[in-house]
Image (cartoon, rainbow, N blue to C red; front, side, top):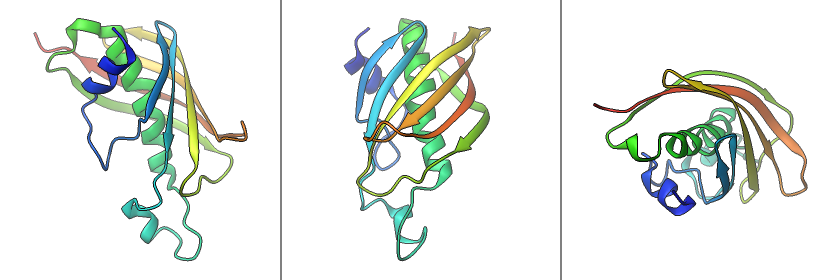
Length: 144
């Protein structure tokens, strides 16, 4: 399965798709990028004078690239009609992410068993500074 196929199978669309590129994916993790468009609606009210990307959006970006893309890869052809549920997040936010910033998300699989995928995931800005990190988990259940 190639990266284009994985992105095409994501269950999201704009404005809630936070994956621009999937640079690498294998059985141990994934790497991808996203650039935050300054016209995204949440910037209009999240700090009026100097908008900042909300932590929940950073978490979602990390989940889409680091958890869901990896899950699609791991399930490969079993994904038709798969239910995806986010189950837990333990996050640390270290630096703000502003509009027009490109981030890179790097995930490392902790385990994938009984349909539950758990990963350690990190987000870096273009200056290679770590902006947030966390452990995210979700359940991927293929429909029989």
